[in-house]
Length: 488
Image (tube, rainbow, N blue to C red; front, side, top):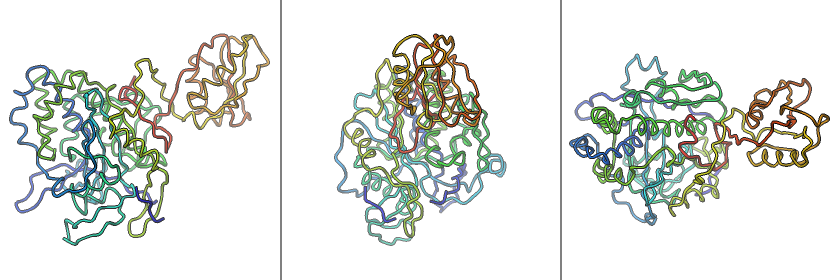
C-alpha cells in the first residue's frame, strides 16, 4: 500500500434502527455489521435438510440491490475461492428514544463504513477466513466522482471508512481492492435494523471474558466469566471501544469473537433444522441486507449444499496488522498504517486460497488469560531431583509466549511437592496468567520480589499448559479458529 505523509480517538459509532423512508428520500444504511451475513451464509446449510428451498422461497425479494462493480476496470486477477466484502454503515437517526438512552446511541452519524471485513470462502468450501480491516486505516482512493457533490477527485488520502461517504459501495470496493490486491466477488452491506432481533431470535449468544469489560460510552459492564447476551447487550459488546487503550483494534477482536459465537449458536442450536425459527431469523437477516445482484438466496443455498459440515472450527479470524498508530495526515486526521509485509502475507494467502491459521487436528486449545504472556518475565527453579526439568519448563514457557531467563536454576528445596508461583503482590494479575500455565499450582505472594515472577517446579509438574491473551498483542498477525475464540 502507499506510504502516507506523516491519533485522537474517534467517538464510538452508534447504530440505528430502520423505519419507513419518506417518499423521495434515499435510504441511508446503518450498522451493524457482518454477523447477519455470516448468519445468512451459515443458515444456508439448511438446504442439506431438504426443506431449504421451500423455506427460502420469496425471501430474495427482501434483499435491497446495489451495483458496486459498475464501470470497474483494472481489477485484480481472480483467485481460487470466493471473496465477499462485508460492510456495516454508520447512522442512528431513526432509533427510538428508549433505545438511544438504554444503549447510549447518541451522536451524529458520519455516513461511512463503521465495520469492514473481508471474508474468503475456500474453493473446497471447507474454510472461511475473516480479515477485519481497521476503519481508520490510511488509504489512497482511486480517481472518482464524489457521490454527494458530483465533484471529480484525483487519487487522494483518506481514512478507509471515508471511501463510502465519498463514493458509496463502488469506491469502497475499488479502494479495498487497491489496498489488498484481492478481487472482490460479492459485496454485502448491512444496517442495525435487525441486529438485536436477530440475536434474540436465536435465543441470545454466549460470550466469555477473563476480565471485566466496562465502557461508559456504551454502558457495557460485564464481569469476568460467561454471559448470554440478548440483542441489546450484544449491541453494547460489539460497539465498545473504550475498554482499554487499543480502541478500535481490540473492538475488532471482540466483533470476531461475537461472530464466531453467533455462528456456533446458529449451527448448534437447531435453528437450521426448525423451519419456523429458520424463516424468522432469515427474514430478519435478509430484510436489512444490501448486496450485489449475484448474491441471491439461491446462491446462499447452493453454497450451503457444499458447506453442510461447516462449524466454528472451519472459520478463522484475524485483523490487518498495524505498523504505526496515530499517523497524522493533513486534512484527514489520525490514521493507522498497515504493516506492508505482514498484511501482504495475509492477502497473499487469500489470493492463493491458503489458510491463515494452523489447522492441525491435534492442536491444543490454549487457556485464555488476562495479561498476555509476552508481557511477563519468569524465572524457573527446579524443586525436584529430576535433572533437566527446569530447562524443559523454561523452553515450554517461551514457546507459549512468556519471557524467561533462558537459564533455569535449582531451587533451595529439591523436594518440593507442589509447583509454586511466587510473585510480588503488585503483579497479581500476571501471577494468575503464569498459574494458568501450571494448573493446580500454588500462588504465594512475596512483597518486594519485583516484576520477575518465580516458578518453583514441584513433583506434581508434568507439562506447561499453552495460554494466550484474550486479545492478541498489537501488531501480531495471529489468526485464530472460530472454536478457539468461543467459550470452551
